Length: 368
Image (cartoon, rainbow, N blue to C red):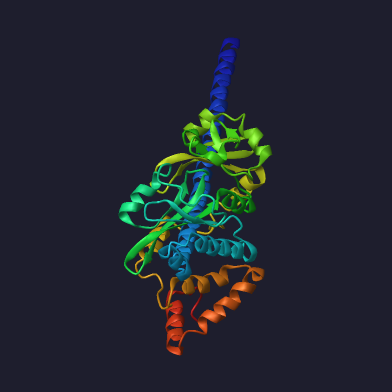
């Protein structure tokens, strides 16, 4: 009888032990699945926000490439005038809009620097010798946008400038990664834009930038506290799984591609504990990030053939379209210019503009 009771207890112990191990195992696997799903959700939001950044920069660049005074300076080979035009544009946007790191430069048809908004000391310098991304543009003459290496890792939109049917040069609009990082920070997400070290030789302005796991951190406004934590995480597991969870902080690693779809580094997306909880709660909800896809970049390029629509110039179109997107305090100066532009249109031209905008506007609501 004692033997049977002992055997029963032994079997019961083994069953309970196996059951406990199974519960722990499936609990761990379930948590792993949840983190993986959450990571994919965050990445989806991140990629849409990144696509918006590219589409917006490209659209803005196309408008600036239609500036008549800039074209005149380029055809007249007047580098000083081009510098003054570019400098005035960036000064105005830094003063009256949220765009604070805007830089503009113009190349001639052979990709020598013609003028730059931040100074004219580099005029005449060749860009093709350390900018491989420009070679394709020279042949296909199509606007391009993306994260690009160079003397710094930045968002760059490069647009062929046309004077009628003739190509007379290229306009490049540059934005630092810090502005993109700041937007994510306002959403509770921290970003480390990590450039591959093989581009460091040409990145003359990044020689003193800090490293993270043998990558160079391109954005200066990264979170120092999270950087110290990221130094000690398991990067092998992060690289294998694509995410890493420790101390209630979620680290997500996403490839960084340039405009030619070549991997040039990584994005390390970090969600502090409170942001992780926020994402968990709204996992099934619509993302609060601006939702655009890479198709929007394609659409912007397609509009390049007929960019102005019912407006006389692309500059008029983009300026009018930009106004509703600006903060109230940013509109003061540009509203006056918009009024002056619209006063030059006839009644019928204004009707065409209104009808075109109404056609594009999406209505949401219920029919009463």
